Image (tube, rainbow, N blue to C red):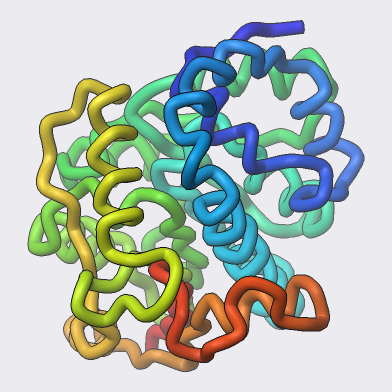
Length: 274
């Protein structure tokens, strides 16, 4: 098995067999050693259940939105932004062989390519680029075959927290295409949090996790109105915003931990471009 870095292993510990059910994604997950995550998980023992629920719900929502778009646009391009070693693109590429996938992040792409090659996974370019450096990012994507004039599904999961809003808005706008779509996952501000997880739990998690990443950053949080403004600025509109309450019900067929519709920190927005 291939051992992966501790923080990557921690994130992948949530991307289990209940999330990705395709043969390639399962083979990917079965081929890696996540034991390095154990010390990190231990640091979050008291809030791990709450964080797990939030992330499982968000991952379900992101994948559901991806499949909704690809069911209607099976030959579209898909850019997975900042996904690290998460096998979402591998899982989707197996199910939508006519789509064109581009997996791009700042690190671990060579390792991801190595693992995918060893398991005989789908043919996907795994690209290394700084998401904030637009000229370099678009050049890397174009060299890999991305067509900026063709419909593109942009997948933004687990990344909106770390990039300053204006910088990320410009990045997303540079990749926006007519007929395309953006799946935008984000965390809401403290004053909107109701029930569990409370603001201190969310803040504590991100503060400690970014400490593990050695990334001295200011966490970015979005109100729904900001997401709608983001969509409008990109010549698009919000089709839906899925709350944790809705996501949990969709995932389980019932609400166990997000009984109040206002509960939960993480939401998933589906934005359609004109």
